[in-house]
Image 1: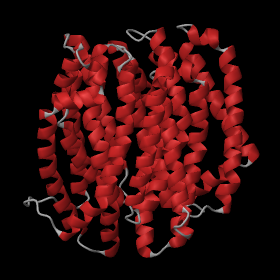
Image 2 (image 1 turned 90 degrees about the vertical axis):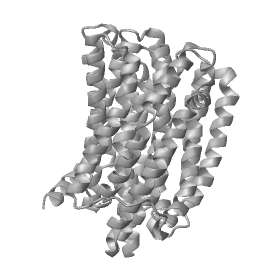
Image 3 (image 1 turned 45 degrees about the horizontal axis):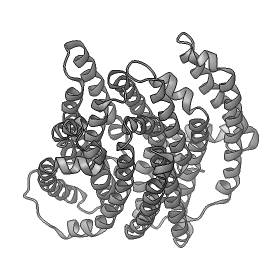
Image 4 (image 1 turned 135 degrees about the vertical axis):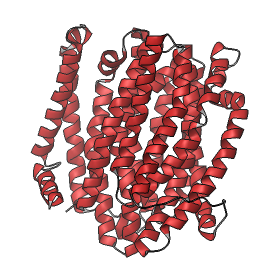
Length: 515
């Protein structure tokens, strides 16, 4: 039976992440309506992507993948986990202050590195201005990631999963205020970025203080633990950098087609909904759980965690991937096509969404497989795998750009993600029983795929029938909701009939979790 704490952690983080992503989706719908895919939208999206890019590989990626296992093991062993976290906090603060200053000074070069197609274009000056305003977000959100790692390691998932809702709410309020008062929308969004970072840090800081941890001031110092943290984190920083290079390649390809940066960004937001709900839930919960189990020598428990995490991921993301491919155009038309976002924007965004959908299971399996390495403090092999993935991505995107245009960037992202998963999977085969697949996972995998394909056929036929209703203003939302409901019913019905999952599994987990 699935470890109940693990399942409840997935549900807690997934539920709050779903609420956050829905708020984020509303934010993007409003942004599309106000800015469309025009130059202001593209300039802001590039500016906002800069601190987020560094956050993903420096803070949430590399640092947390190294920090969380070390912190979790110190908690399990009764060592001075709080002192280790305090040293990490002040060391990271000092490093980030220097990094933020340098980033702001180098902003014109950073914008060119992200989107050289903006050169000699009005988008360039706007992106530099917005980037300088938004870049301090990296300081606040990186410290938030550290505190969130502490809370997750102690099993307190709700605060960290809920805090992105605050960011999205502030963006929505800012856009409404800008519209009501006539403020420049792009500039308003840029100033909102660092404000959301401060708000998220304050929220999580209060939560960690209530958990009993303190961060009394001390001058940054390189302790033996921090040296070990740096040694473990360095390959993960490089691996994260490789992943971000993939994104840079995609944006560079897109920047030479007017509107393509925005098309890829809006498509990214749609596929991030299921990716965030499942992938983040698994990544946040599985890493500390595996770290504690390996420290305690619980091989069987580690294997159960890995297999149930994989099963949970595939059960939700395989049908989501099929739905994103089959319903790409109806989704984009109904959810985004209004105001400054026209029919051409909808079609191009839908193509990008379908390409991302093909890679959705790979993006989530990446979150399942990486903890097998990081829980063992092995960050070197994921780095080598990421380099190979980067070469595939760059070769695919740049090589096919003359033929496929911006679409090559989206498709290359999915192809390289599957290459990365293949490497992680093969590399984990030598890790022993804790990384072995069990009979239940092997038996259910093909059934999950079959149920998802059945759902895809049902949705394809239903979407063709519903074209007039999806186009009419009075029925489009109802028609899309009906398609979503039909997809859920057909997938879960087929899944139960084929034995891909059983409702009794969920009822049993809920009963045991309530005891």
